[in-house]
Length: 126
Image (cartoon, rainbow, N blue to C red; front, side, top):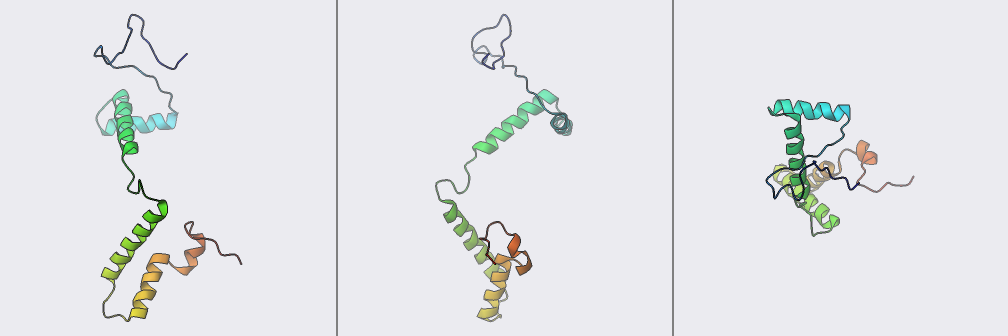
């Protein structure tokens, strides 16, 4: 069996005949409840909700990631540069350069008590 569903008396490409293919999906009770809740919130029935949610998911998954074509490291550097620029705009200009650097570092790196929990930083051996 190839996974497709056919209806007796119909053959060929359904979209060319102006008909849409009928597909069955197996959902857990939890997922079915979530789909039903979404359908109710959007004033539609389950089958239309599944179709619309699939369309939304496919559109979202085909959207080009902002760092496509660049290395992940280049993307990380760009994010850090943007964050630094925003922080510099927020800092009090009357602060000494040393204090400005300390505050920037604190905001970018986070509190020292959480630095061991960060997954984006290398772990220091003790």
